[in-house]
Image (cartoon, rainbow, N blue to C red; front, side, top):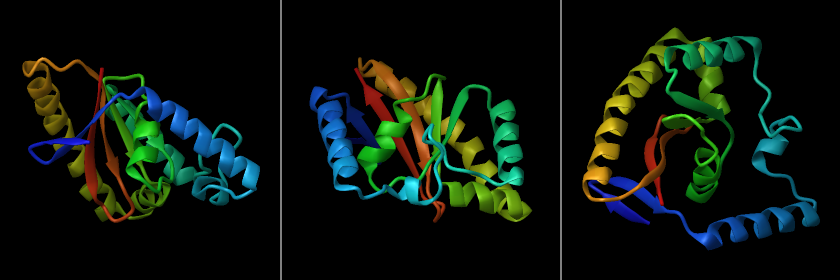
Length: 158
């Protein structure tokens, strides 16, 4: 991992997929469940959300049409990168389900995180532009927002 002015940037590596697949297979074979499975994930890998959280997610998707919102529990930067790499829009946002539930239940928290998303849009534009100026081909770029409100920026490069 290399850093660009405090932002983590990940290079797409062939071994990443192989390692992730191998680790997933070991987890399934050992019978231990991942954090998202323990939290009640559906067969499609999405966590179950309350009705309020689902409505908030739909609202976010409409408001930020250029962002893919991915709701999942993740334990490491590699796991976060895996989820973010699945995004199909200009930017990807990985958000912890507890954070989304908290936003849906508390209007002050919702405003706090909406402010973070608004700021992140500007930051992501600037990061992407800077990387492209350096001759890097940006495959995917996004942020994670964990349950403590910590925001991490990610970029996957070709």
